[in-house]
Length: 209
Image (cartoon, rainbow, N blue to C red):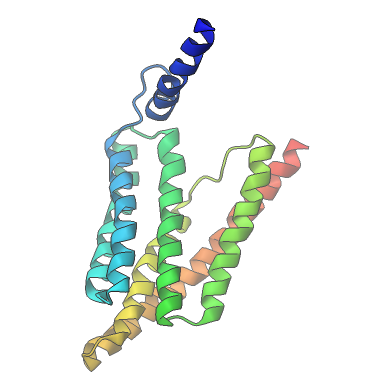
């Protein structure tokens, strides 16, 4: 009985060690992972600002998020602090940002429904593929440079389009022009990288058989 209690009491410590450390003494609490965590905290802030129709501050929140998204990857490579946690956490936070922005776009009607549906179908499709890859004990997709570029463009494009609701007509026009410039590239790259990830996933599954 006492041994069972000891085993149960040791599990929380084991879980903490698994989350914080990778391998022998390799600390997962790194500067890049800390930046990713801070970026995640911006998601509820962004949604709160959208609910209050404070679009300028919402865009600023996404600009900061986009900057941390860029620098966490750069710092991970420069400081040799790449980790398994970072590989999983970074794209997960990106997806949450995309989801929150899509919610905002749907509420405000700033983007056509077809664009929103295409992005959702892409992510749902890759999510299903990732499920089967996990069942086959295959590693998840490696985030590519084009994939990061697509996310970067969408994170800037979609909120810019929200600024078309600005009372300043000239500013709204500029927001529309720059917003769709980013959106065109962002949606195109997002769908194209989705195809690339899917091809990589299907190839990995085929080789596993």
